[in-house]
Length: 504
Ligand code: ZN
Image (cartoon, rainbow, N blue to C red; front, side):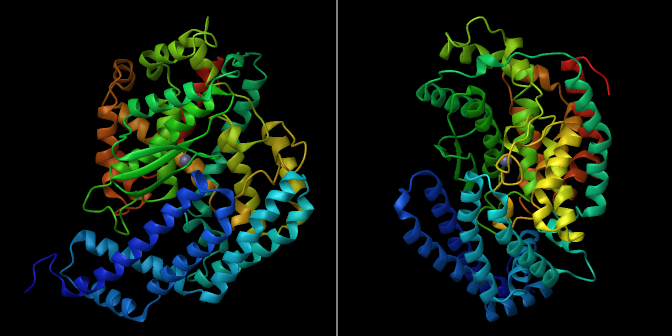
């Protein structure tokens, strides 16, 4: 009789898992390098190396011996809970990869690599027509892949959504986005018509990169980022990646809006803390990372928006900022600053959106993706439908395609079903926040500069599980309630109703 953790079958599986982990780690590290330090001309040659690594990954996952061992492990009662979860995750990965022939995978990878350049050029030239044929090709392949993966008559868009967030299908998302459309869309209208104007002009100006970097490092450390186990770099678009729980890297970007760099760092630190808090037992395994894209965004958005844009957070931090930028911030009070960083301004660009209008950008993409995948909307009609929805929901119309349907890279990469996780992240964050407030006085802690009880809550309820639980399970176990979008609606109405003195 074996005791748990002594499974011989799992012992045989382990070298394959280690190999997958090593290949994955190498790819992640190359990804970091390409976006931060690699010289421009390195790209074609380095891409060839990355291609070989991903081919090795594919072959390891689809190896016949691995399949046999995985099936034996599934029947083995001697596995620990962690081992069983790793085997489950391996099964998911194998299923996703093996239902599509390697040749089609490679072709798709080549297509999206080409598409990135086509998209970039079309965006620069503000010409949607130039991108449309490529987009149509990508969409058709993604529909084909989804139909290969679909089980028991599952709808194609549900399959795509499930690839990013398990158990959040159209039925659930229709309810979620429906509430945003019914409540937040008219609320934004009311708020912009309220006549209340917030001055944020002092956030734009001549802020030296060196001083911004100094503040970025200070803020990262202040919120808990550990520089002995992490790196803060610079890249065009801020991101976070993790090799394991002793090496988590994040970036920010510096421009003439000082708030961009600061809030990017706070946002990325939210992602980074999730990965730094993955327990030793799970790190470098298939379950040793954040459970989903939406849950990851919940952590970054919680730290950036709920915590980082609150007045209480800035009580101990603002004096430091004012000290670094004495001229730029002279005469700007703590309250002026806090109001400025929460200003609502409907606009056409998602990545520049404020906290309140952001989910409406996602609502529009969700409705469009649904039309493209489920209702066969021709891709050539996208700009018209896009502009119409922006006009109706946000009262703005894109001037050209670069501010419209060409603004995001996601579709050129075949990432349909990805956008909803951004809005779900904010909604998860609001549900955690409401629950957290019942057990601690968050504002009082922030005013004292003590974030540790907040981290303790998140580590205990979210981070330590890695991928052992789905986001829906985590929410339920932590807050005692299934996903409930009402917390998010209430949070937005309370915060922005207060700031602009309007009610829903
Ligand atoms: Zn993020």
